[in-house]
Image 1 (cartoon, rainbow, N blue to C red):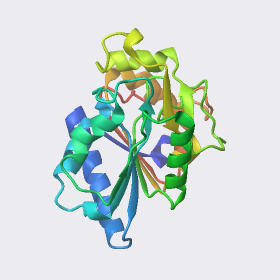
Image 2: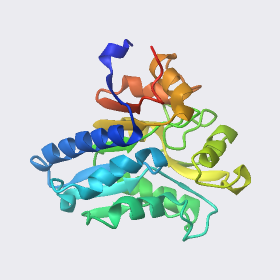
Image 3: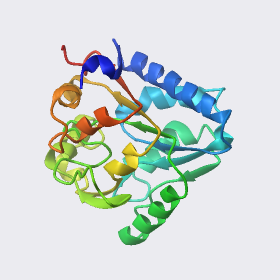
Length: 248
């Protein structure tokens, strides 16, 4: 696929591109507000999403009373109050500032099979309107690392073992001090669940993501770089800072 056919926005800084992404997501939600009483949104949790989420948290245009929110993935084996839990990140970054219609976070304290059944049922109620996501250093979307990524996955959410590149990224992102501190297992929404959403907004920042972005945009579409599948979505918007965006 030619790059000129993709929706790509590039800015000099992470803050600038995060705010641009926030404005684009805000505009999409405002348009949906005029058509629907319930808007279903999936949120990623990562440092790359900081400025975008900060923008959304301050929005005066979004009717949060119409938003039903989900998180994209969650670590297993962390203590309930751990700041690295994605539910805690999203709570601190966004949800303590707003009041959504519904909020359904993956609960790692429950048995994995029970939580998979619960989230699967909740996701299946109605189509997902918007996904806010990023890309990992290994090209993962959510925690669908190359060894477990499946473009035809029959599951909505599944338990996965994180690969070493993914776990080391959490150290690079300063979420954990050492790779030994990073959990080995997580629950993640699958690739088809994400791709089935109507609109995707993908924010990627930092020089450490440069190789992944290059492959995402240019490599053959396969699970060696799972994020390549995003090029097949009918309405995916990419937001890169200059450090992440490779010269083409």
